Length: 427
Image (tube, rainbow, N blue to C red; front, side, top):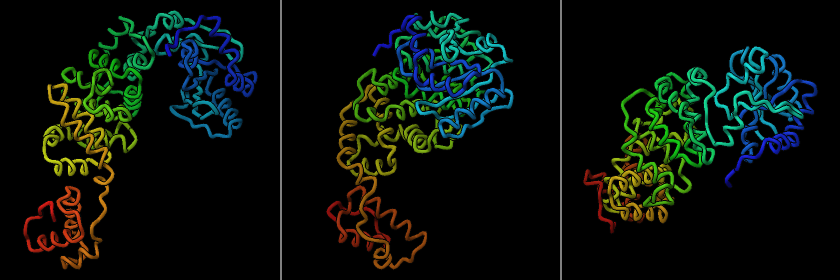
């Protein structure tokens, strides 16, 4: 779907007849309430709006509106931020809703403090009018992301990332040249932005349909380095070919590894440029735990994966086991990097086939012997040493160097005698 902008009359008709907005207007009665931001923008683009921002005149009005809607929807509003500018957030039957107090009770001042003109269209519930003090409708028609002012960007540096995220989300949109200049100038300020909000924007960018376009723009504007979990040298331009493969713009040697894994792979590409070695390095971004773990493992094991890919099947199986469920992300990133650097795609395809064929049994191999039998064979009581024996037994099982209970017993006797922990595959 191209999401062609609708004319202003059609936009107003859609807002006037929107059943969700009509329900809110009925709940709030005579309270002055304006719909702002992405909801109006997306209606103008014939898109389904994801979230709804409402503006009411003052903190008390915001509190009352939140309580009224919360009661109607049988949900509890949450208060976020400082008292005078606190935002009420609640989940409605169709989307998440935020209720903001108007800036000093002055509608025009509230409009002019916003981030981009496309987000500064105001619609009064229930019947209008539509206010456009900044030329936002014209910018939507021209598919242009234009900042309202340089000061507005500087006041909240997360908006620098948001501008690029909108480019990656809205088909055919581009940054206004002056806005692009402001973002490049203000990029160092992103270092001081709250990491949790930066992390949310990065995740949304990775999920966007045109993530590669947005991240290339970030690299050009100097945002990627300052968006990282800590300030350090980084060079993303050298790996933009890898990004293109992860985002589906260029062929990837194992395309299935990124089909359902693209956001993790794109974020791993980012993390490898910062660089990141453990999930703790990403903790400030407040990403879901499993996501952060996959991203950190992929970022830190890229070089190792590029070495192991050409080794024998046993070593590849062991590497898969050590990566756990992060392995598809590891392979997606490493294969994209290797092929972008001139490597051969065939070993990566072979490794992906091994994962598809045997992944579950590699990650969770069925024990050949239980712990009690291992204790009997080795004469080692439960404790750290027995734990190490069980771990080594699992390793050679994963490598398929032992495949039967009898082979496991022979291996344990060798192990107890101090012989090599490696036995022949025929064991």
